[in-house]
Image (tube, rainbow, N blue to C red):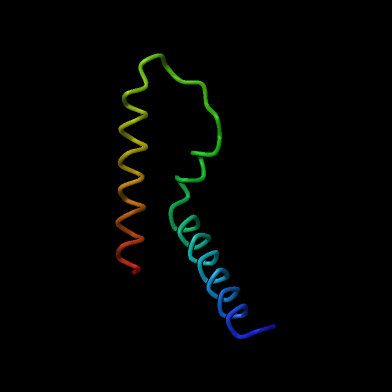
Length: 64
């Protein structure tokens, strides 16, 4: 395996580990994958998802 290929594979592995670590720390993001029936007015759900996304971005920026 050439050096650049192994370098790319290693960094893909590190990125995967970082994603798994974030999901482990923030288990509330795992429920976003599940489909749930909700009320007709979904504004509260939209606000909740937005705040969670902001928290995730803040954590990713703190790690960088």
